[in-house]
Image: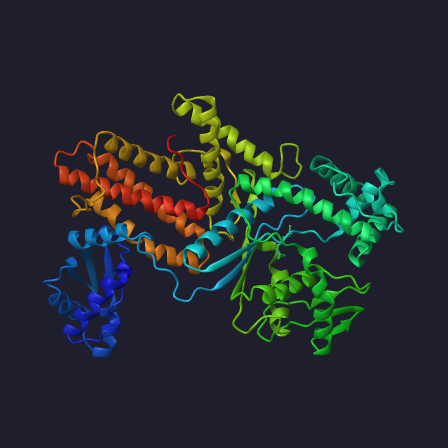
Length: 588
Ligand code: ARG
């Protein structure tokens, strides 16, 4: 469906032309004075220069030609030359009826679907998920859903961190504990066991122990680096251990992400792209992009227009070891080869921005991507505690994701139990669903790049700009619709009639914005725009609901029309929360 602003702009174009002016001045926007009008057109001001006339004269001329408009019920020229507009109740309800008849609510799919890879999650194998990974998962999942809804082919890749010193540390610690395992015998030629020699619980204990020891024990650290090196050189026993570590970790990660309703199409990791590195580096050398500097192999990526120093991109350290940058470049090589994406979007902590500037520039300079391949860094800010400092446990340690989620669920459970009597089982179920909305909405309602404060009390509150408030609104609509049905009502074939009061009109006007909000949310990769939109709708709906009789409406037609409006409101809200990555319970 065409956007309502475009339809009104078209009407205004004709009016400008009829009054003798160029249609290019007719652009209509949402009003920034909602107390005066719904839409406005400021084109008379710009036209005044071309036609050497006072803007108000032009505006008056245009307004005159709109006298019989079916679309606009009020058209007013005001000094110095604004044109204030209100749309007619009939046109508005027609637009909404067309929207409700469409399964995509009037939002058209992209004409040229792109293939987009979204790199998000980024957990590090064998280390527990911490809150830093929460934002990537929540934002990435929503961006993925938004882009898919826009009609694109979107591939989500978790991009595991499975190639660093942490692997060597685990291998070494395991070797100290169970030296007799065949993985450590360099001469072993048999098959390695299928079962991993550790559980996830052990793995989660092994890593921190080893990491702590490496900080105090220099020889231990050296040995871990050596093990990492041998692993990376392809030592068979270590490779087999890496496989075990991955299996055990990944199944645990999948469980965690499932709880968050986050899922990935690809479970690739840094280790998968190592085979691409030698040829990639060779080519960069051959083509003269890479050169030696202080023993390391680097690519210069400075540009004349830079206002700050952009250091060269380092490919290989002096000992020949590859780096985080090298791995990300090789990942680009693999992605181009296997999926040929039009765009790659990275949802990563904004403190890694320099790393991505380097990777993107290097990839372009060395021709790893095509000139029009999009490389986008969607950097997010830090999630802080109430003290404004990065989130910590009460004991001051790194906050694990599971703890944070259970904190929210506990708080939610208390609130849910207080709201109405229900079984323990139902309360837990509802608390889980609503708790997820609290966490996700609390995050997504902020512009991604900003830091925000994780506030359990505020996020779980059913009042204010929160997930639970949105869900309450949806549940309220559901319960009215259910009562209507239970009383034998059926509005399936009914239409939304002309609005009868200001609150109803305000809600309707908001609903018409659905397709343009979706467009912006996709173009700007901005879930917070979806949040802001549904918050406005929830407010408008609740205002309407408090001042309008719905089920008690005498006139049957009018009642049906209101029921239809509720149904549409519910669909818009539910479509939006689906894009944000959570859902509403039946009752709360
Ligand atoms: N594993 C990294 C970390 O925990 C994040 C990975 C982000 N993605 C990427 N392609 N570098 O910091």
